[in-house]
Image 1 (cartoon, rainbow, N blue to C red):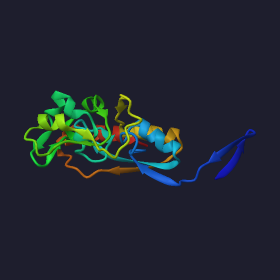
Image 2 (cartoon, helix red, strand yellow; image 1 turned 90 degrees about the vertical axis):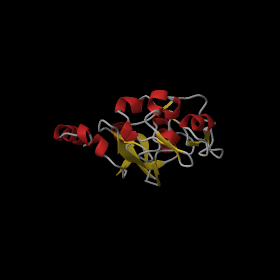
Image 3 (spheres, rainbow, N blue to C red; image 1 turned 90 degrees about the horizontal axis):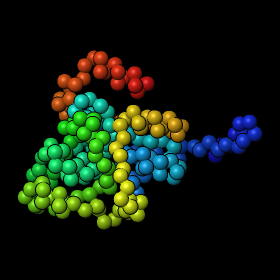
Amino acid sequence: YEMTSVTGVQTCALPILSMTFGGASMQFPSHTRESYEAAVRMGAGALGCQATFTRDGNLVCRDAPCDLAHTTNILTVPNLRARCSYSQGAGPTCCTAALSLTEYRSLDAILPSHGDKSLSTIDEYAESVQTESWRTTVYQNGACFKLMTHQEYITFALEHNLKMVPELLDADYTAISAANTPEKAAQIGRAHV
């Protein structure tokens, strides 16, 4: 640890001992402010954000492009659940690129949860969903955890003087390509500098 004095006050600069993707995601839903804050308290010096696009071309932090069924409450929101596909034996697929940023932001993040894939409909599957038994829910207590955009991730990292490790997830982005004009690309580029 490096100790420095600024106007007589001792400060401690932590070395980068650890890096996290998604924050403290064993305790809090991944890519939420609470998860990132817990990771900082535990000594993370670098935060990763795996990014994917919403339908309207906004970058958001996700673990996978189509993981919303297992990491958000999308299956409890009928009009958004309708955007998911379902295959008996495989389970639901709910992709971030199917939602606008406003729709995405209306979701709550949850700890990874899965249901019974042998059921024949997405509604039956949704009724069977449970948080993985080995995960702690001690910090949940009915809390609502909001998903973060890529810009919010950058702001958080800068506010906490952390290194950033962004990663663009591999996905089929043709659905959102119409939303991306040269003007939109320039706007996104300026916002992330």
